[in-house]
Length: 170
Image (cartoon, rainbow, N blue to C red; front, side, top):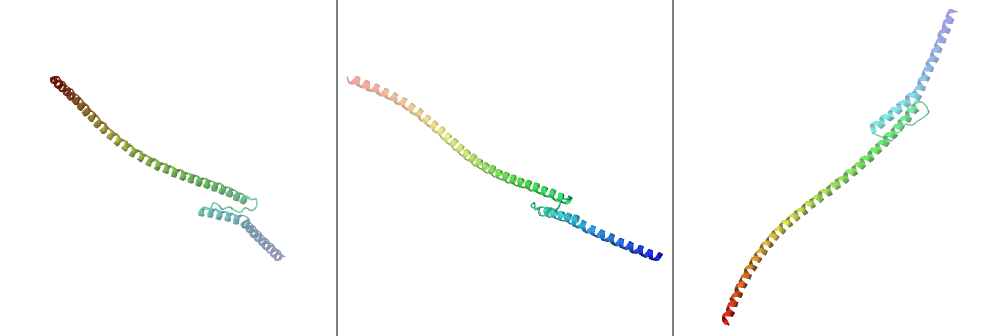
């Protein structure tokens, strides 16, 4: 009877151990399906988004557990990052356009200053020429005045000679 009881105990223990092994296997399968696989998928997706710089990647959400919350958080984060990158790209484009405009205005200013310097030089040359011409006109006017004074003296002298000649003829 002892042998039969021991055999029953071993058989019962073996069956219990087999049932426990089966339960652990089912639990492991369930954990793998419900936890590990979604976590691995999430990690792989995050790594792909990081590696490729793909801001369009979004995680597929199934259920309402912690992993679904993780997926929702990741998707919200990606939406915000994508929006920030769009804003930065728009700002960079705007800054680029502004820089081009500043460069264009700078070039126009440089050309305008070149024209102004050239025109100022032309005005200075013209003023020097006018000064020389005024000096020459003044010299000529002075010479003309001297000549007129001399001619006036000659005319008076000639008038006196004519007057004496007329007086001596009479």
